[in-house]
Length: 192
Image (tube, rainbow, N blue to C red; front, side):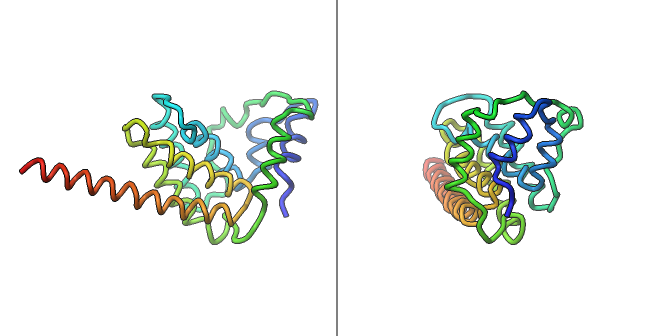
């Protein structure tokens, strides 16, 4: 069983000389995909209008999905970013308590997102990233929410949440497909 995330990050970020992004990435290993997915999806999952981030964040989520599908061990990050030092956080920082609480909902359960679920999880991340790039207001929240749950499932190696979010993504793809088909039919009727 993997070391709890809150404990791992507390050890890295509360020490005298805080860790670099590269050290955190190395400690997270394959779970780094989940951390980045959740980080990029979080703003889109909020039902608040905010222009400008959905396309670049969607591209990032799509790229992380490709990395998962290809089976890369850790997400590729620029060297300059890997050497950046993170801020030192007090061991009592509220974020560590929040992560510890999340670990009650998300915990390591089979099937592993790093094993049999890696390909479907990566494909779904690609699909949600693509949906987030649709430049229509209000269309990013649901794909963002699915990508957030998917990221947390991968981060915590929780096969149950990874499976649930993948199924939710399939339903969402069906919904978007039905709406697009209906819109095309409507346009076809109006064009006659």
